[in-house]
Length: 423
Ligand code: PMP
View 1 (cartoon, rainbow, N blue to C red):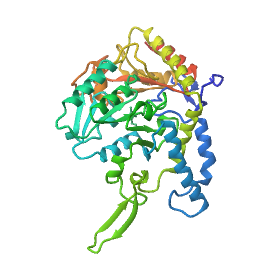
View 2: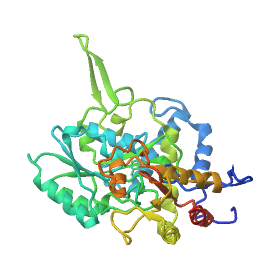
View 3: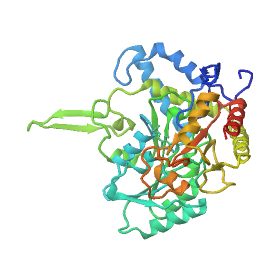
View 4: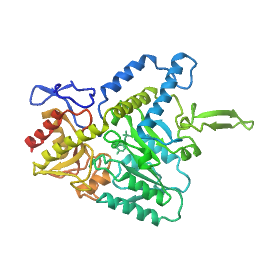
């Protein structure tokens, strides 16, 4: 397994796991969409910095100064990676979920939010119920744009609006027409936030070229360890709102009022929404991953991933009992995230067999995108529970295989062989 080169080496290449059939095998991590293994280079960078870390923005010592510089430089590196505009802010959060909840907390009064039912729950749920218009799953990128345009044109009264859309689906891997959706949003006076949790690890994201207002992503899907995420984009709504978290670091000046109350002036920088001691290691790791991806030839990574996708799809197509889930059809451009069901198999049992008999780690379930998976499985309206309550021999959940820059060919070959053998 070791002899297979990967474009960007990741941690865990040597991990051996036991098989129920006896013996052991090198673990094939094929669940990048949940969390990708960290890049070796990110790990090395973090390890090199670890002895020097100190408090950020709150220490006079050399290491505190150094950490403050590295933390702020990490923002600059993320801004470069995302192609941010002059004046855009990069806020460090805990995750994509946290970033979108932060944005939800700063919306202007009476802001309407438009989301497709196909979104991950992190993008579907943070908005207040009264504000949300949930749009039907489109069956093509063109239909997505038309659906959005119609919904925005119909909105009454014509006030502030936000569109939240994913760049790449965490279920089908399909790419969404982000630039066209952004143009539609702006033409109707709305803003748009891009959920790039699944896009950024597989595809360059350019906030300027795609003309989105904000981008959110998570470090642990972008080949950095857990614990940090990003919300980047326009400063105005962020700076006009109350802080997401109130506390030290977010406040510039705090006074005890004569009447016994407390008066506060908040920062107008990204720090406004980063109260408390920030996760300097998390931010540094994200920046290291951004740098590694920026310096790698992203075009080459995309090209190689395309070959892996073609191999997996061809392998699955060879097994007639397998049905790959897709909204936009065969030819839609996609990233390395593929969900499927197998006739006659409960998806959880199938995923468990891949692990126990082949040392392959995939995911089964509804992938925190219940409405989308139900639509794709034709199980609309059913009460499926967390992972579905499969009837005899039938799945109301699916199996997802996902991979990326650290995946050796052997993992994909083993997966294709395993599916065929199990069926
Ligand atoms: N959006 C998408 C498209 C995702 O795939 C995920 C993670 N599965 C999220 C948002 C949420 O990311 P996190 O769990 O890191 O907050």
